[in-house]
Image 1 (cartoon, rainbow, N blue to C red):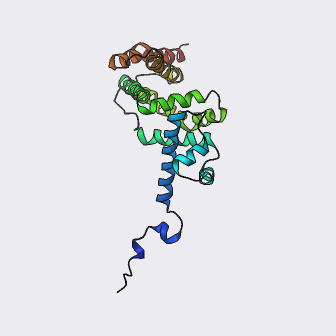
Image 2: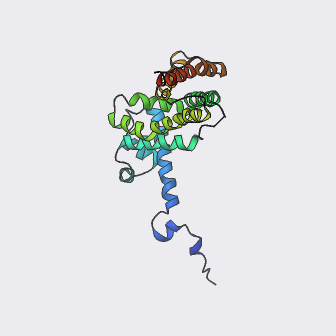
Image 3: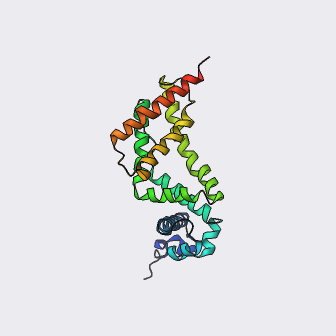
Length: 215
């Protein structure tokens, strides 16, 4: 007796000859994961589509059909890794609490395994204008929006009278954290987070918003 249900248990890609949307998405994720591994091993300058194709067991034509070049591919990989591993910044109920959480998030990112990847990509931005532009528009602008939301919440609570200090605070915060971790090679513990927030960010935000409303 023939099993008339046998074909229905085969993957859809076997029946149609084309990958399903889920299979295509998984294949894309596999390529992007391989790209991040390769990037951390060799750096952006030595990263190539040829090497990625070999690492991911994918044809170069397959890769180029999805991404026009290595800049677009690397940005997509970084963006997806960021989206997969980052929860929204918490609303702690106070500006100080939100800023402490933000400093902790940035510190964790730079001290994690992906920290070396992030630093390497930021260094490559200086020599690849296309990479720099795509990272700014697709990755860093979303980060800016998250930190801007902290300031907007503080204004809504009445803790700040305006949002004028947001730009300056976002410039200063990563600079201080990168200096602490990568240049001075010092720990970034809770006392450091308190220092960044109480001695730098809050005075900066308060001063800027006061200046906005000065006659």
